[in-house]
Length: 292
Image (cartoon, rainbow, N blue to C red):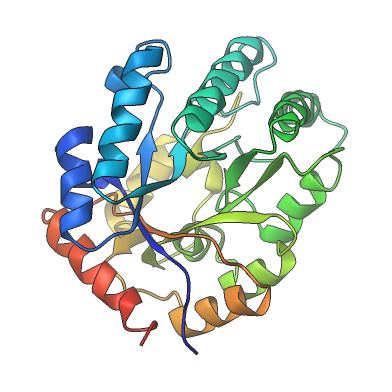
C-alpha cells in the first residue's frame, strides 16, 4: 500500500494562533491546513473581503492549501429547533468564507442522531441539515459531519434521507473507537459514498461510555452523581493518544480509504497532550511512512 493523499494539519492544534500555526504547519511538513472559523479572528463576521484576500494570499505564499474549515458551533448541534435558525445562518456564512479561502468543505458536529426517526429532535436535525445540504450543493460544496457520536450505519441512514449530498462526512476513526466502539474500517466502507474529508487521530477505549456524556444531548441532564462517582473510581472511559499508540488499525484504515477511492486530505488532529507540535510532527512522519 502506497498512499497518495496529501497530509493536512488542524492549525488550532498547535495552540499558538492562526498565523503562527500556519507557519508551524509548513515547518512540520504539512501540505494543507484545516482552520476553526467560528469565532475570534476567523469569525466570518470579522473577516472582511480584504482580510480574506490577505489571508488566502498568505496561505498561498506558504505553499499550503486549506483542506477544510471547521464550523462546529458546539452546544447540541442542530437538535434544538429554536436555536437552529441562527446556527444554520452562521453555518452558511462559514461556508461562504470557506469558498473565499479556496476550499469547498466545512466540517461540523450536528449532534447525536436519535434512534427514533419520528422524534422531535430527529425532525429538527433533519430539517436543519437538509437546508444546509441544499445550500452547499448549490455551490458545489459540502458540510461534512464528523463521525463518532453514533455508529456509521445509523449516520448513513440519516444521510440517506437527504435530497442532496451537500451534507457529507468528515471521517474521524479515533472518535469511533473511543466512544461508540464502532469499527473504523467497516465505517469507511459503510459511508463510502459520503466521505469528503478525513481526520487522522488515534485513541483507545477503556470502558463503555454513553455518547450523551461525551457530546451532550438536548434534554439530557448529563452525568448523575452515581456516574460521576463511577468515573472517579474507574478512571477515564477513553483517551486520545499519539498516532500508533491507540487501537485505530491504520494499515487497515488507510487501505479501506484506498479501496473506496478516497483521494482527499488526511488531516492530523491533536486535541490533547502537553507537546502538540512534537506529536503533530511525528504524526506527519507516521503518515509519510505509508507514502514510501
